[in-house]
Image (cartoon, rainbow, N blue to C red):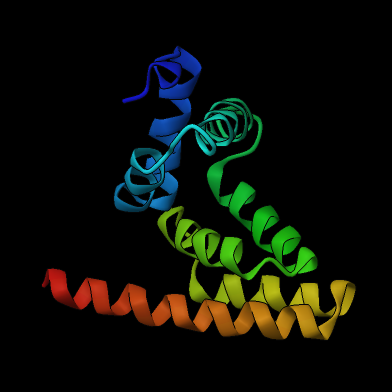
Length: 135
């Protein structure tokens, strides 16, 4: 691991990030960090995951609800893909995820919600395929 990733805050954030998004994805992101991308990996892992996701006031389910709504509003399909998987890992049901997208459609716009739903269905298929492989 890169020396700049050896802080306690990074380690705390890395643990939470792995638990929410899955170890394979996170480990690949961190391992592929180079001189250009390492500072952003450090920032995201320490502050997003270690500081904000590490707070106790909101549980991870609530944070997942919020992230899905905000990412839908921003129409960020790549991040929606990650956070749908995270939401499932945090215990949200598919029906709850659908409701977030429906709510966002009204307040954020139908085009953004349509994109979010498309990505969500792709993640559900991937998630199901991975679960079938484990059996």
